[in-house]
Length: 136
Ligand code: RTP
Ligand code: MG
View 1: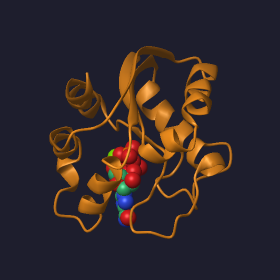
View 2 (view 1 turned 135 degrees about the vertical axis):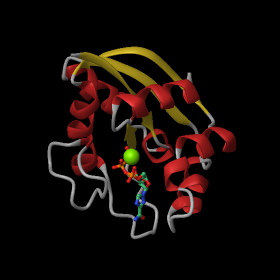
View 3 (view 1 turned 180 degrees about the vertical axis):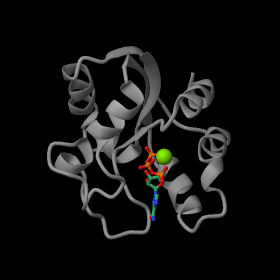
View 4 (view 1 turned 90 degrees about the horizontal axis):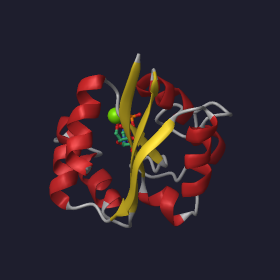
């Protein structure tokens, strides 16, 4: 079924000049980028976006990291794109993400508490709609 997902290119991806490479992989897979913008996230956007992680040890470092530079937000559409993009992205930890994935090919082990793992992708239809409303 055609669906849509919210993709964020996190500050590490933007800073390293990987925006084009990440968007290329999304398009090469056959997905459609229907909205795209670069912005500086606000604390309010991040509190809403990461509400499920509030209270976890990595929460504040994660928010601080996401505030450290611009991010790129995209709405991506396609059949099965929610799980499909998460497959393209690879596992959360770049060290264990498989080669061939965005995080496996391009992500680095920074040896820090926060995983600077280049991208975010929604994990369900409900998350996607909730997150799209936060960023667009
Ligand atoms: P995302 O939401 O960014 O697509 O990634 P995900 O589903 O694979 O990971 P999730 O569990 O939702 O965690 C959100 C982000 O928090 C950072 N994180 N750090 N143990 C840690 O240090 C840790 N765990 C998670 C990562 O940046 C992760 O993408
Ligand atoms: Mg997640």
